[in-house]
Image (cartoon, rainbow, N blue to C red; front, side, top):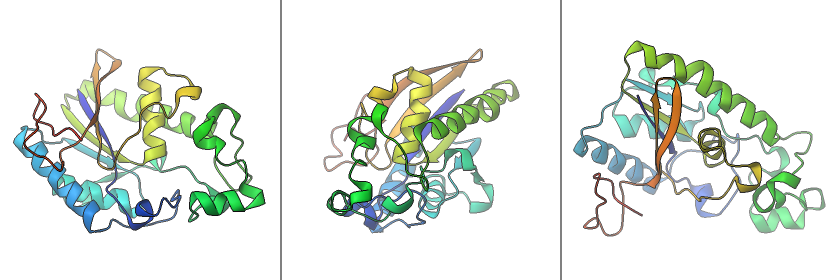
Length: 220
């Protein structure tokens, strides 16, 4: 069984490096184009989806709809793959966070995850790692016995790393080892109850679409 895990398309907050978290932002024009081009790429590669999961936030749901051309009613919204809650830090740029005494240590979230301590109104790594592990074990793993072939999972930059960490076994220290652009595709294969990461960092959109990778994906 193949599971394609992706990040939502671009939003206006992405362009300003504002922390989104649970803030219910929407895709901008470029983000919609990224999702539509990804849909075209899936079609060209002969990939269709038996099940589609999405974070319940608007930017993820719209991405799922555009990537698959399925109605929203067919998208399974799952709270276990929602983005981190960042509390007071949401909506702030890096400079704005650095200027706020209460958020002076927030940079550790990206720079040194092992030392990051979530404020009372935010979600710690431990919570996200627990809920994403439950998503894999309790939601996805049982589907293998149902004969399902392809699944799409649309999530967020932070939560996607947690989903991948569960598969590749990296430590929290290396949480941000690989940066993921919007609409990045990561393929996980589930076979005989075991997950393995087949590839990461593929995208279907590119400034130079003449450069295709061997499997039909455009490389960014």
